[in-house]
Length: 306
Length: 316
Image (cartoon, rainbow over all chains, first blue to last red; front, side, top):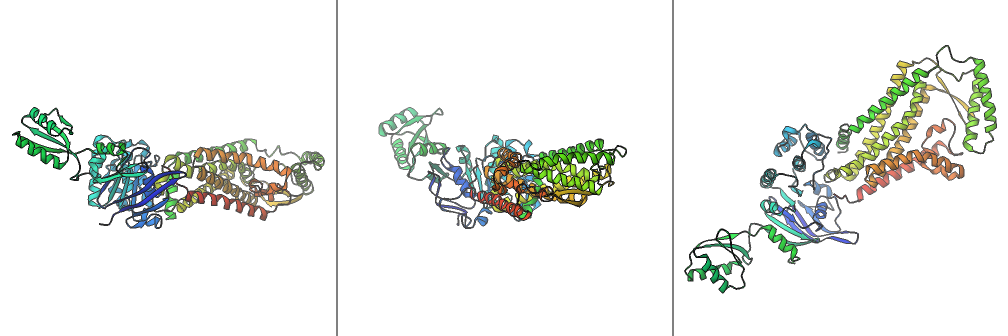
């Protein structure tokens, strides 16, 4: 599958500062890609380069096969973006804002504008001035604006800012639907890690301008340590045996009377065998998915796996 | 594409409150000058007799005789020209007191072009900087329209706006003037360039002077536009441009006293009416010279605007 967005060894210098360092990643059609990192990591600068607001110092950014430095017009026509809070024209109505941006692209019809207003649920207030909108409504109009010209890549910078939980869930469903139905690639930068986790297929962590880590959210590799919960009949005895046999492990007992431990799959096999040998009944073993937040903190605190 | 972009700018201009405030102010000012002119116009019966204005003109001429040897170039120039006009009036029996008609009223309203100059500066300064201030510029730039196209659309829209406003001022003045004051009265206008008196049609003179003023508006608008593109701040561009408007002419006049180089300054050249009335601010300047200087300034303003708008990164 040909990636929609492809960054190859992208660097950005501003004066003496090396803001983005050798950044490379791809985003595929239909994929939602989370772009994480603490403030000042270079996330926004990277997004600015992708949408053409800032020049690329070295390396290449291609969007649907078009190089942004060489074929700017064709490349940028494939991108829709909401950059931070969508600043729209407060003195224009919602509909006029979309008419305005629609005129800037080819082939945006009145029908498209209607559809996008429907999609974000703003059709009923299309004649109202944007200045009267809540932040959440503005955010939604911003998304309608970004999707107007049917882009192949949707770039969203902190898209859930100012949305209430219901609005966030709704938006998340929209993104999922759009990504799958229209085969659009979506890039989401966010500091709300739990949001990204629920939305994204894959994510990258950026720190000090460098890619610390990129991986799939849903799949855990075999060699990775996971957090498991064991449900057994004799909880105290089981804990004792485990601590004795695996003194290096941290073993916790949860409030629901389950044993929680961080082990690899191989270790889990050994534990299983041990418990059977000791005649402890193991009712259930569950993998508690390691939350993205935990991984994020781990990656950034340790300075990352390079 | 450029047509659609201008359409966009136009939509924004007509949805902003400031546009209507400016239009309303202009209407108020026109109503003001109309009221003032109406109540101060000389009545038929009280137009001074020939004896009266002849002695008045003679008295003034004596004063001008003294001023003709004054150290200041402006005072000398003014004395020569005014005296020439007075002599012409005495010789040809043309009274300096005239009935107010539509042309005379429109000449009064030429002063309102200064108000329009401020509006033009506001427009030129805000059309780019406002989008930066509001953060909407980035949404314009992340689309397939090139930066050059976007800036060009904004510049052309500003010029159309200013031209439209000038037409409103001219048209409304003509309309109100012809209703209130009619066409009766003198239809010639006396002017003097370097002591030579020229008799002109009032109507043509008014038309020409409004046209000449539009050159000044063009230069001021372009200057404000450049400042707004470079500084990206609405307030800064408006303040700088208005200071430029009010100080520029004074500074040019002062410098003109010391050096001939002043003739290369922008404001020494913006008032093209000077070539038809009174003579240029620095001796030896010609209309062609001024047009060339203005073209060079315009070229510099636009080059800087487009170069930096294209090149510079846009922060979010």
